[in-house]
Structure formats: C-alpha cells, structure tokens
Image (cartoon, rainbow over all chains, first blue to last red; front, top):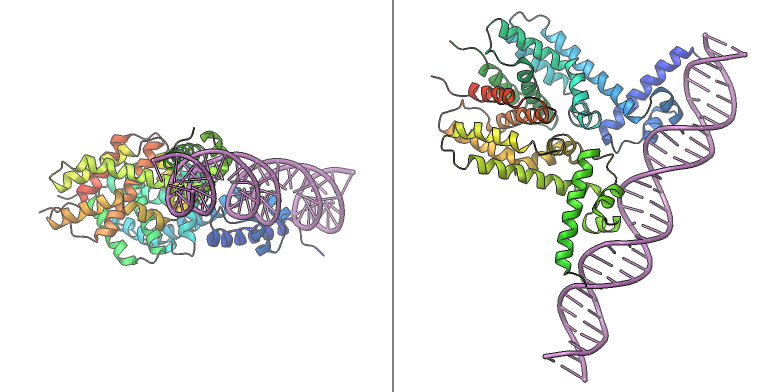
Length: 193
Length: 193
DNA sequence: CAATAACATACATGCAGAATGTTTGTAAAT
DNA sequence: ATTTACAAACATTCTGCATGTATGTTATTG
C-alpha cells in the first residue's frame, strides 16, 4: 500500500533537501553531482527533476531554509530585548551562534552568492537575518542612540562584517575575539555626548 | 617564420588571460566553457591546457592579476599620506575606485571565494589589498589614534565592509553614500578623549 | 665555425568518461 | 479517466588527457 501523494511529495522533498544539503556542504555546488545526491537520498534522478526544475532550484530551496533558520534564531534571541542597542549586540551574537551549524557558513556566504548571484542572496538575506539588523539600526537611530547614517548601507556594511566573522569562526577562529571587534564597531556608531 | 618560444608563450598566456577574464566576467566561472575562452582568444584548447593545468588554474592566474592591480592602486594612492588615519580613508577610497573596473568585483568577491575557497582568497587578499588595511590599522593603533583592538579581525571586518561596498557600487549604488558610511565606521574606532 | 643530430617546447586534434536536463514509460492516487 | 509521482533511457556537452606534429633550442661533430 502506498501513502497519499501529498505525504509522498513531502517526504521526498525533505529527503532531497537533506541529501542535497549534505552533498553541497561536503563537495561544494559545482562538484556536487545529482547522481550523488539522489544516491544518498536512496531515489533516482527522476524524483529530483520531478520536484525541482534543476540542480540550482534544489540549491536555492536549501539556501532559503538555512536563511530562515538563521532569521528565526535571531528573532528568538532579540524578542526579549528592550534596549535597541543591546538588541543589536544580542542579535549579532545569535547570528554568529546560528551560523556555527555545520556547513551553513559555506552555504549562505560562499556558494550561495556565487550560484544565485549577490542580488538574489541580498533579497533572501533581507527577508531573513539582514532585515533584523537594518530594522534594529533604524530603531536605534530614531531614538538617538546611534549616529544618523544611511540605514541600508550601514546595515549592509555591518552585516558584511558579521558574515566575515561567521566564516572565520567556521574556519576555527575564536568567537570571543570576533564578538569584541563587532561590538566595538557597533559602539563606534553610538552617539556620544 | 616564427617568433622565439619565450615570446610565443608570453603572447599566448596574455591572450588566454584576457579571453578568460572576458568570459569569466560575462558568464561566471561555472558557465564559462574552455571552448568559449579559446575561441575568443582564437586558439585551440590544446594551447590552454599546455599553459595551465586546468580551468581553475587559468582562473586563479586571472584572480591574482586582478588582486595585484588593486593593491598597486591602493599603494599608489596612500604613498603620499603622512597621517595614518587619513591614509586609511584614502586607501579605502582608492580601493573602491579600483574595484570599479568592469567585472572586477564579481571576479574578486563572488566567484573567487567560491572557486578557490575563502582561505585561498584570504591569502591572496592579504598579499594584496587587505594587507595595506591591516598595516594601516596597526600603525594608527600604535600611535594611539585608534582604539586598541585585535588588528587582524578588525581589518577583516572593515575589509568585508569595503568589499560589500564595492559590490553594491558595481551594482549601481552611489559611491558617496558608501564612502560616508565606511568613513563613519573608521571614525567610530578613533580614540576619543 | 658551419652543419646537423638530439631534444625540448608549443600547440592541434581526437577520444573517454561523466554530468546535466529532457523525454518517454509505468504504476498508483484522485 | 486523468493526473501525479517517479523510474529509466537518451541526447548533448564539457572536461581533461593522450597522441601527434611542427618549430625552436642546444649539443655535437667535422
């Protein structure tokens, strides 16, 4: 007996996403082959090309899931923060923590931009983690806690710093040193009297 | 009649580097095919594989040339600066200017890290543009002009911001806004009394 | 100091293996 | 009966290598 089509599709897509994530992380997008992915998932390429337009579409779905997980972690960490400046620092630490998931830094920061393009990744990021940073900056600037600066560009510049930190940490760098540096960058933007 | 082997090799490698740059920029590394590259150069794939181990080796040679050009531009711009802090701002602007060369941002900031790996790109960058930033920070910190922070990580964080700025500018963003933001980040690290 | 033999270099051409995306076929669900 | 979910075979294309050839370069000999 066979399950409903809906259940089958859901299970198959989940299996393909999991297997794809594994292979993409270990091999990189270019060297990851669809035969390897479907073999790991225990199915055939027919299933893959039924559910996803092509290899890139599978990759994009994985990227969006990863970005969503990061955004959720940041939101959860900053929900309780009242002070906008403290929320920025806390959100940054939550970001770095979330990015320690195995292979996540490579997926979101190296292969993602190269495969999907920087613009597409920026859009995904804005709808996920980067949006929180931008909103936090706007809030802090509105309350006079931070220097008044172009919010979008400032958020991107800081976001780039956090990204670099996440990559370094994924490569074995010390987390605390990077938190020190990023907090210093944030504090540097604070309004002083 | 034929030229000397040395002259032939030099001309052939220059032609392959130029054609490869063109195709890599317009197509991206993955979609760039070696037949397209050698067709543009007006030679055969035999020549390509004689001078370069594989497609990646050609790409790496192009990347190193681009990174070297950026480093040269930064050094030229900052050579006359006495004040370390002014040198940092000037170097940043020179970097952004140098990165406006067509396709350079994509090569150095998107495809480069994905193809060669972030570590290899970091090494190339350290020997090129990023080294200047780190040295400038150390100098400024030593003179008490900047807050004392881990120089390597601070340089990387700022470098990441400049990279993001270069990408945005390549995508049509306003240069002056980004200079404002990056100068503000630098100023934020300045020692205040 | 020619002339030439011996070798290296630069490149072209053809081939094998593999990967992608498409098409066709089949069984089960709706 | 029709559509969905998947399998399996197919056509195209690319990469890297292996072989072949012509020219440059160096050593040797008369």
